[in-house]
Amino acid sequence: MIRTGRVVDSMDGRVEVCFNRPEACDHCSGCAGQKHKTLVTLKGDAPLGSTVDVEMPAKQVFKASVLAYVVPMLLLFLGLALGMAVFKNEGLAALTGLVCMGLSWAILRFTEKHLQKKRNWQPYIVAIHEEGE
Image (cartoon, helix red, strand yellow):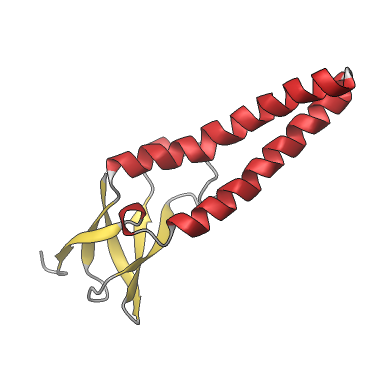
């Protein structure tokens, strides 16, 4: 997946790139509710104001989506089933489901910190276009 953005800041081998959000993202609040722009900090060097093409490998985008959406849902259902089996009470089962879904947040935080160290999970600059291009 390649997206094009504008470099808005450059510091110590890192650049901050501003992307216009695609229409498909309009109903998601994953970018802290920002309506039209998303800022991402990447390793690399590019002149301030230049346009860059940034790639995130398609396999990693799919895996990240599974981690972000499927894992919490599975843990929620697992917690609901476990809660019903143990407590035989719908209210406690719902609470158990929510606790398990909360546990998925901790798992995702740990996984995120681990994956940030891997090069193939990080978006990277594939092309730099100067202002005049």
